[in-house]
Figure 1 (cartoon, helix red, strand yellow):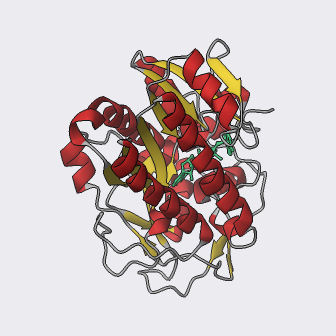
Figure 2 (figure 1 turned 180 degrees about the horizontal axis):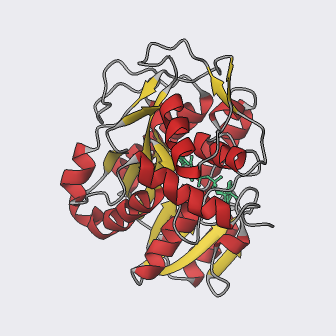
Length: 326
Ligand SMILES: NC(=O)c1ccc[n+]([C@@H]2O[C@H](COP(=O)([O-])OP(=O)(O)OC[C@H]3O[C@@H](n4cnc5c(N)ncnc54)[C@H](O)[C@@H]3O)[C@@H](O)[C@H]2O)c1
């Protein structure tokens, strides 16, 4: 299989690439490096610095490398920024997404795995969230991802494009070689790690008056290596299972305070925390039911415990205090 990974120099992408290489896939990575890191990829990998919105370049990549499948991870990813700069989300995640789909159509590439998100569900009306849960996003990030999913439905009906949308809940943790390093960090676990390393003086807790067991938001954290393994299985099985939208989480929720507490035990650092205002577009609880993912793809997770996730992040961050240092 010849696989193109868009956004492969990013956090999740670098781990997906690591796993695909371990499993012997032939891969090409296209990333514009707006957020990703070239040094998160092996030096000898087939890497093209390219923007998914450039249809002609993408077509050339597909043709030159005989690409038959795409893992599409490139995009804008921050919920908070999506509520101040919605245009970036509609341009990068939707408009440029159309260019990518058209490049695929024009070169006959018929399989895509898409990095979707729990943010498309909006405020849960029941929990854990199954695939049947209504999709009413409360931020433009979730809306832009939902729009791309909807385009995939029509490309499937009209052009026979096969797709698997993997709706990640919170990707977290690290492998030995790859961890989370964003230019503007908004994710809880890397912020906690930076605090434990003395790079920040505290962690902000956005809201302590949610209707949850300790008043702070509850999220479902899935280890990035488990998440990457699901991509590999989805690639292997997508011809048999057909178009799918699958939830991808652990089925277990942890509050912000609980994650901080776990990190205090693992790092031995007091990790000071401060209560701040709620952020716009943050639901109180997001916990997945990933039953369908497990059943359809026959996967089980290796690192389901929050302690394992935080421990792996701590190992990577303490070895790489400046991240990829580029
Ligand atoms: N990290 C999470 O918890 C999480 C949760 C749900 C969904 N997702 C989705 O998973 C994917 C990966 O997330 P991540 O945390 O690794 O993000 P990331 O920002 O680390 O990686 C995204 C990569 O895409 C690249 N990119 C962005 N726009 C591009 C474009 N137009 N052309 C080419 N490359 C481009 C960036 O340079 C970066 O390397 C994203 O699509 C994100 O929306 C992530």
